[in-house]
Length: 117
Length: 210
Image 1 (cartoon, chains in turn cyan, brown):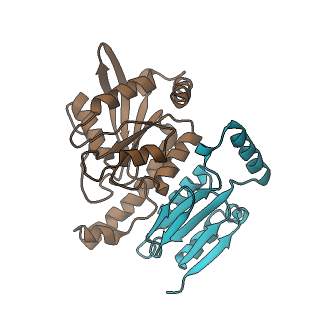
Image 2 (cartoon, rainbow over the protein chains, first blue to last red):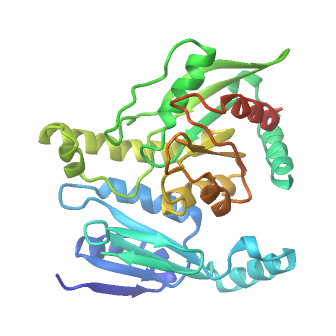
Image 3 (cartoon, rainbow over the protein chains, first blue to last red):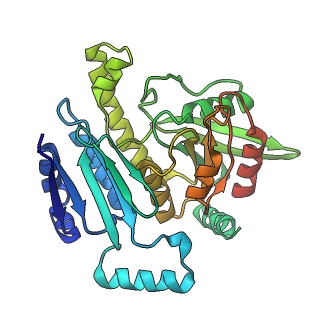
């Protein structure tokens, strides 16, 4: 099977409200989003995934990475990070979403994501 | 310490206009982390009856289950709450996994469909909780997205969290990995199956709710 990877701007993901995302996922495409999804968006994505689960589509593997870990920055750093994210309208980082039938596991390290097919 | 104070404040304001009997403590976590085993242990300790069925086949709990008026005691103090056991949250549900666990194909498909609804219900019920025990399997890698999503959503809603690493009786249990992965949360490791460290868990619930 040929591996397909789609780089998706976060703004487009928001605009399409996940609809086009599932079309790609069911077409065996791995999606890489140029931002970390908010927790609420991740929960919404899981809910939408559950609505789409069928015999042919068993669900997704999902993992997000922040550019800087909140645990390692001081109060000023957190304020600066919040301010920058408010300006650009998204959380800095990336999100990897793939069909579960292709991605066996995503191992997360605070610094990187490792994808196993 | 700061998190405990913030958690207490959030709990106070959340319940300012509620009657005490309405306090809801939820059990959340990924599939097969031992939420129902822990719910059963708590209910057996204080009510003398279990909450639900436990199984090695994933997604045994597919509906929200609640035991009302669970009253735990510490010395002369008592604490009443409604205990809510939720279906495990997952990003994938493959009916073939249930077939491999020994279910017939028709049963497996039915279970998968019910399990998807259960995950949706679990997420919907997040808003109804006053405190959540996030039950994690301490033999598994804690940095999986389901754990991170659950904790992130509880943070976003300002719901106090107690992380409960379960299955500490297993040789491969690594509570330190959970503590290192989620250092900002209060953590009480237990073995729900064997009842290890339950007194500390009850004591922590008193600290967080009082």
